Length: 438
Ligand SMILES: CC(C)(COP(=O)(O)OP(=O)(O)OC[C@H]1O[C@@H](n2cnc3c(N)ncnc32)[C@H](O)[C@@H]1OP(=O)(O)O)[C@@H](O)C(=O)NCCC(=O)NCCS
Image (cartoon, rainbow, N blue to C red):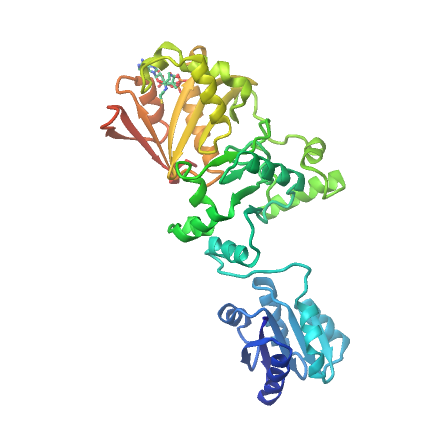
């Protein structure tokens, strides 16, 4: 049932309107004598439609409508005696959806309300900040087994990519799947898919404000509880910026679309047309998600004699064990593994294992590339990478007490020494998310 707000300077006329709306099966949410402070009134009353009846819409009314239309748009039906074309134009400009001149037969009100509220989409409304509850309200209205979340800052969303992420989600029987943990697609093609029951758990249990506002962090911060998986592009495109957060982003995305001449082309056609715009510079250290071809290099770095000495197990890893571990980790969005690359060559790795939003970081550098800032560079780069999503709120590392190189890189990368870990006897280093950008 639609909730209608009536604005009418005449109380008697408003009462007649209320009767007509009740007959048409609508609910009158409130009756106001003027459009004064309309946006605040809408926020309090939460109507679906606004029905204004007036001799002639005043400038104040139109100004209030224009502000509301900008901040909290709602369909507006205007019933009036005013037939001046300039006033009509001004009313449409202020956001009026239906402008009806002359006395209206109340029996004809229903189709007008129906058409004015039809934008072609069904809408579920809810709290502005408690977005996870809003998602569950939509789920209640449209029950489903899985939910796809797309955000409005991604106008280049590609339906074929959405389908591919859904297929990965179903094939791996995941609770939650995205294509950003780690990011291998241009930023702005983000897709999340989750089981509906998992979304409901998040809505029931999430307490932190950011976990309610950003909908999914409650789930993807807890790989120990939910089965998370990542859909990977197989390419290192995470530095490309296709999202729209600022007016400059909008200009850039518009220019990209103009260049292709088709705003419905696939993301791969868009990439072919615009190319990579943010390649790493010569000599720069860049991160890319690890891929199947990195297995041998990772095993070599892991089994270097000092890496074995400083590891928590203090033993070399067997190749069969390594392959099984590596296959699991490549699809696990709770254990993110990147390769550091300089001028196209792999120079080291950095990994973050997440549990309840706390990421444990480990790092290893190719023995031939040590002592040239690669280890410190990997830590700096991974902190930047983690700022691109909300998964990790704090980073920790366990460092062998006799490993001076490691203590040096954590100390100079914004980590603080916290003392010895009781279980392993290793030194705990910690770094808060608020310092990731520093
Ligand atoms: C620890 C490690 C990642 C450092 O990588 P790296 O690329 O050499 O790091 P950087 O070049 O950024 O910095 C290393 C610093 O440690 C210092 N260092 C290295 N070995 C040292 C030693 N034995 N004694 C004192 N300082 C030492 C270097 O001099 C350098 O400091 P500086 O730049 O002030 O001279 C690398 O040595 C490695 O892969 N070790 C094996 C795996 C490991 O121990 N990982 C850490 C576990 S989380």
